[in-house]
Length: 124
Image (cartoon, rainbow, N blue to C red; front, side):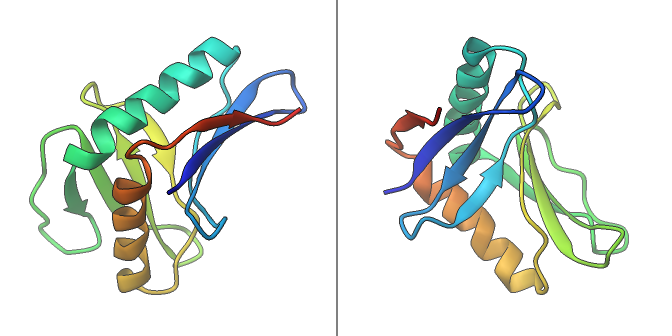
């Protein structure tokens, strides 16, 4: 089972990482101003990740999917990444860079699996 880990940031805010059972970070959040808004972000990821469509933006002429969705894209360094968008289109989680499409899709599957019943822990 995965877990959400909330950490304070240097600027006084908070962010979370979703960690898989093996401890690897599979998705991260933006910086939130308060712990409450950070926990709301976790609730959104938990709600939307299992039902999100997958939109592969690396394919020419890709079909746009409705929100919530995972968007797969290529970053400036040429790595494949995903971002999870909520039903309102706001980005609620992002991935690390992957060297292959298969690894990126495995990352999405890991998020979808690990959010189910994932506890939230807070680091100091």
